[in-house]
Every structure is written in C-alpha cells, then in structure tokens.
Length: 166
Image (cartoon, rainbow, N blue to C red; front, side, top):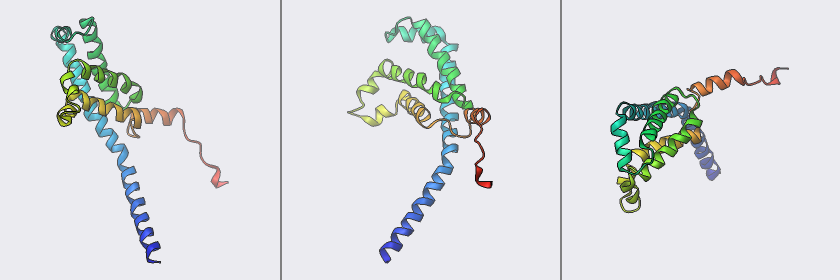
C-alpha cells in the first residue's frame, strides 16, 4: 500500500507540474516572438538602411546578386520580424526566416559552424543559431494563444458548443 500511495503522490505532483507548465506555454511563446521578432526587425532594418554596405558584405562572402539579396534578406527579416511580433502568419514566416539563418550560418558565420564539434559553446552562441532556434520553436509550436493567428482562427473557426447541456 505504501508503494501505491507513493506512486499516487508522484502522479499528482507530475500532473500539477504539467498544468503549471501548460499555463506558461503561451506567455513563453509570446516572449520568444516579441524578443526574437524585434531582433529580426532590427537586423533587417539595419540591412535595408545600409544597403550598400550590406551588398558589399554579401559580395565579400560570395553571395550572388548581392544587392538583390541584401534587399530580399533585409525585407524578409524586417517584415518577418513584425509578423512574429504580431503573431500573424507566424509558422509560415518562420520557415523562410529559418532558411535565411541556415544560409547565414553557411556563409557569414561559417567559422562558427566549423567549430560546432570542436567548440560547441562558441558555435551555438553565434547569432544565426539563436535566431534559427527561435524560428524553429515558433515553426513547431506555433505562436501560442496570445497572437493574432489565434484571434483570427477563433473568429474564422469558432469551436462549436458541446451538446452536453441537452
């Protein structure tokens, strides 16, 4: 009987922990979207405001059509950042943002990528990795309930009331 009681206490503790963590999911996703969305916005805005310097950097690292890609990536990061902040088309925009961070890792931050297995702390501290990580979290978990995506979804597809009260 003591063993059953112990298992019951552990299960109740586990269930309580899961409820608490479920309650924190949406605020956590909001914080990720706000912080990293703003980071994407600032990075993209910087690229667009310094287009010649960005294009020159892209030329130096061997990106073809550097001016076009500077405008493209700057716009993607700037406007994609705003979409993340708002929680609008979050999963959709996180795909090209993640792809952009993979390209950044392979080009501008290739040294950090090379150190992934020799000095992982240094490699994982590179900005593209952290932006990639945030994008993948939003891509896989969604924006959470504290988003325009959730608001629009609830208005377009309202949950039907259950027929328990009949």
